[in-house]
Amino acid sequence: MADSARERIVTGANDTDSSAERRATELLRDRAQRNSNSPGMNDLRPRRFADYIGQRDVVNSIQIAVEAAKHRGDTLDHALFHGPPGLGKTTISQIIAREMDTTLVHTSGPALERPADVVGILSNQKYGDVLFIDEIHRLSHAVEEYLYSAMEDFRVDFITGTGAFAKTINLPLQKFTLIGSTTRAGMLSPPLRERFALTYHLDFYSDEEITQVVKRSAMILSVPIDEAGAEVIAKRSRGTPRIANNLLRRVRDFAQVRGDGKIDSGVAAEALRVEGVDELGLDRLDRLYLETLAKNYGGGPAGINALAASANEEVQTLEDVVEPFLLKIGFIMRTPQGRRATPQGMMHVGAPIESSDAGQRSLL
Ligand code: ADE
Image 1 (cartoon, rainbow, N blue to C red):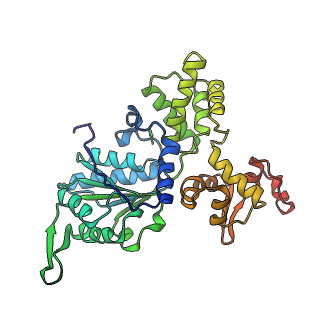
Image 2 (image 1 turned 90 degrees about the horizontal axis):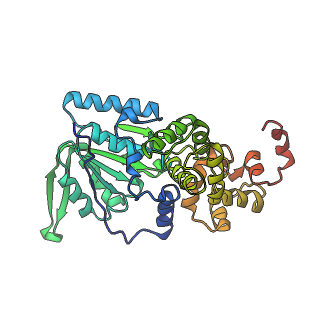
Image 3 (image 1 turned 180 degrees about the vertical axis):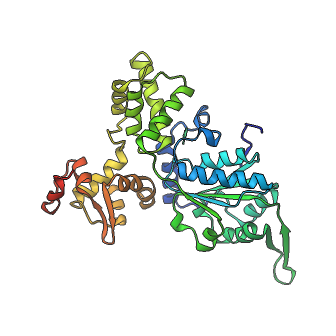
């Protein structure tokens, strides 16, 4: 089996993107993957299931589906991956294509602007190809409708001409696998969601798993690191491999310039302090969110629109980029009345805790 990834990337102009969506998308990418385009970023990604750390249940299940499809000489069923950014949705999809010994065609919801874009891509799929649609929740309704028959019956019907000259053309397609990736499963329409036979949620990694990722990446980058150094980086990586790899690079640079190139816990902690990453991995934007909620709204409840206006940020950025990890570590809660900071969240930004919360303080 060839080990090199066969991947085609399909992009398209997208003038209709709202600036809010664009900003959130940029942040989703930039926040965790600064330098992701530099050579080497891809090299840290596991290329086979055997090298993949974490997401055990997801990997086991998809591995069985892949093996079974290969055994039958069939294509893999359509799969949907959802979860916060940086947890491996794209990486797992690339591994699937590699393990199926097929080609991954990479595109995104915003790039498939017009029905002609999607019909063009679909008609170019070869038997067994994996069509990967990132941010699939951002497909337009018109484009999405073409996917229904493509996914179900491997054909698309499209209309050429207008009025009396209108003609429906039925275009048969090669059997392919659609992999959708989204940070917003809730924004997918039910008809689209139901057409994925395989649906997986990726969750944040444990500190132990991220420590393993850091050690593996350090080995690939030939950076000497001890266990404690890897643990310090892992603890500040917000359970996200992409962030861990990025922080590892920053610590490596610091160790090279200010030390002897070796990473231990002291070097890692100092390098990350300089980077403005606190002991829990929260950065400027996380702290701004928490401080706004804690100090401007007395800990909440506050509506997301009001919070976004006060913090001068986009709602979508707060929802997609900031909130998932703060929810996960129990610093905020979503209630019907709005967002609330928990006593832990309040304490983290040095805000006074209400007396009704004081009882919980002793439990912290
Ligand atoms: N690099 C990034 N994500 C990884 C993972 N889940 N396992 C191993 N290496 C990784």
